[in-house]
Image 1 (cartoon, rainbow, N blue to C red):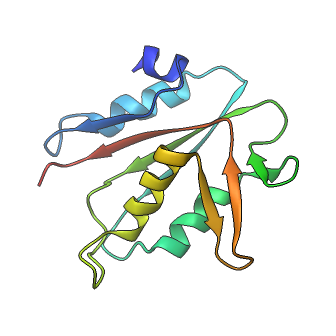
Image 2: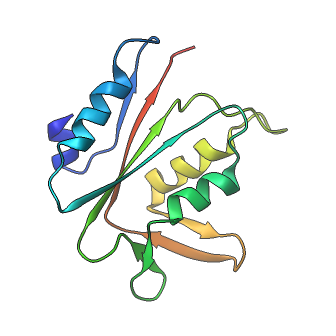
Image 3: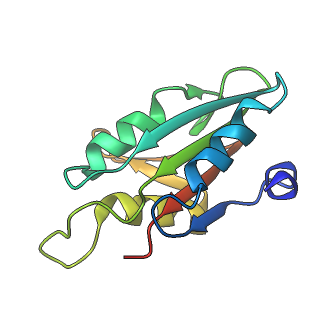
Length: 132
């Protein structure tokens, strides 16, 4: 986990309840140096895409043009716990996970109010989930 954070790779920890996934990631987040900021969010059955996007965008500031990132030169590490929990939508997908996947593939998501692209920089995701 130390090396993944240092190299800015996303990580997904999968294990049964009580395996220590959340404790391990929270321990790593507490040990990060001062040039990092963290944001922890927990998914539940009622987590929707719009709410998740607003949580993700809350610590970001506009940089230049369509670029967004954490304040100053900080690096932001998001921790998403219980990744498997959101309910399925009518298309049998989980929209919050689709939003996360869009960022992983393209490093951006869209502002749904202005219908504009938002390029997200200097962020990284750590996630934990139960395999069931």
